Amino acid sequence: MSRELSSSSGGAQNKQADWWSAWGQWVGGGGSIVAAAVAVGIALEGWWRADQERRDNESIQARLVFARYDVDSRYLVVVNGSGGAVSMVKLTEMTGNNAVGRWERSETDPVQFGEVIVEVIPPHESVKLPVYYRFHPGQIGANPGATPTITFLDSDGRVWRRVGRDDPQRQTAHTSST
Image 1 (spheres, helix red, strand yellow):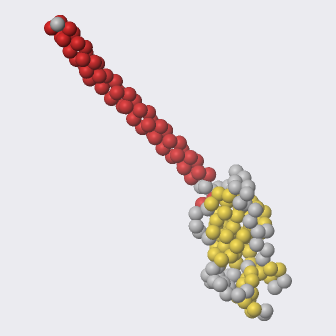
Image 2 (cartoon, rainbow, N blue to C red):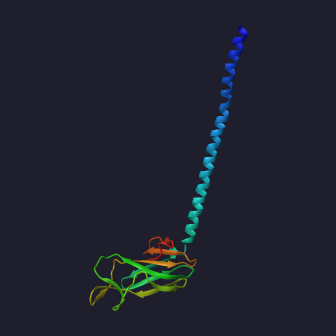
Image 3 (cartoon, rainbow, N blue to C red):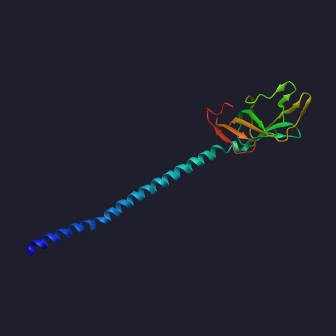
């Protein structure tokens, strides 16, 4: 009978020893999962950085194109400081001073927001367009709080929207109709 006890107690010790010897496999499996998660995280960060760099490169030209309203001369000045031509420049909005009135190019020619105001601006050039603010009939002047918003095509055909000197925003086909 003593033999049976020793053999049955040895079997219990073997099961316990098998479980303790398997802990290394569990730790190894968990480490593999953690390593895979870290690798996926590194890959996602790399893809995000590459996408960010691509978007930054696309906006290089757009950051050098802007419009400003010159209060002294009453001109809308559109500047292309980039090395490529821009086209289809549209004035989409003039914001700022909330005086009652309207924007005009001349006494009989109101500004039509959203229409093309300049077909092409060559590299490193600017265009001046007379734009007046009519406060009342017979009273035109400057609107010192005015900030122009323009849209334009860069030399690669991408549509951009820029409010004053704020960062340009790339527009999709659905948002570029303004």
